[in-house]
Image 1: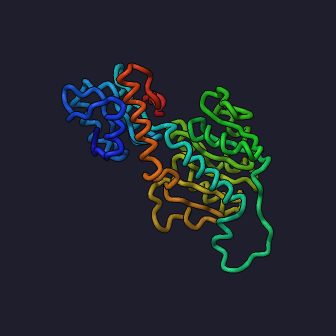
Image 2: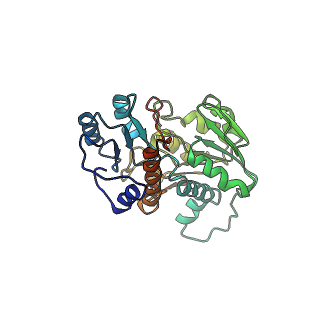
Image 3: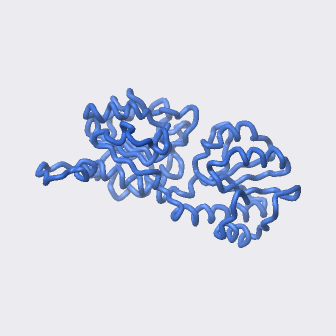
Length: 302
């Protein structure tokens, strides 16, 4: 386990029948707990060709994309935390969407009582989710009581359980004009970078709410600022930015009806127990020769 060994992860390994040992010729599996220290992991893989399983710490593996492309080989399995943090992230996404529909960015900045009655209910609305992973599926489950019509946009177009409609990525622009809420919950790859730009924003209804809960680089932030400044969209909210952290003075901070949370949809308090449970199950599966959860396809980047 590297580069550190918090007790919760140590217990996850040992209670599932695994043994923690110093990295060496007898090491077969590695739990990597840093999302930012890609270089050291590359060095570890170079020096330890006997490794056949690496557990990565987060659902998104874009930080490791070059490493995955370089180090991916038959016999070496990478797993991520995809699906682990779906519940808190989906919860946060819906909270942001409802805040926009109820005009909370404007209300929160008000300095006097506004008697204008503005607000949109989520009930019976049309929701487009870009992405079909664990977060998207949890959003589908959580919005069911709202009688929301859900459209999923995914690379393959294969139907997603619970969604009323699933379309492939090349049909994204076809479904945007009818959306009341658009939530981006996709993995960041070379194909999805800036998947939402000026043309996509122009296709959305002026009354639509836009939420990015995945990665900042999925959205053209310049186009987003221009869209909000023009008054097109009821508002936008994001838990992620590009660049991140978002610098002081960046136009997104002051864009009209913009709501920003600082990558807090899945705080360490929430994620540590969830990742530890994924580690526990994967160690048990690894020892028993069963399929692992969250397997990453290096060629796809997720």
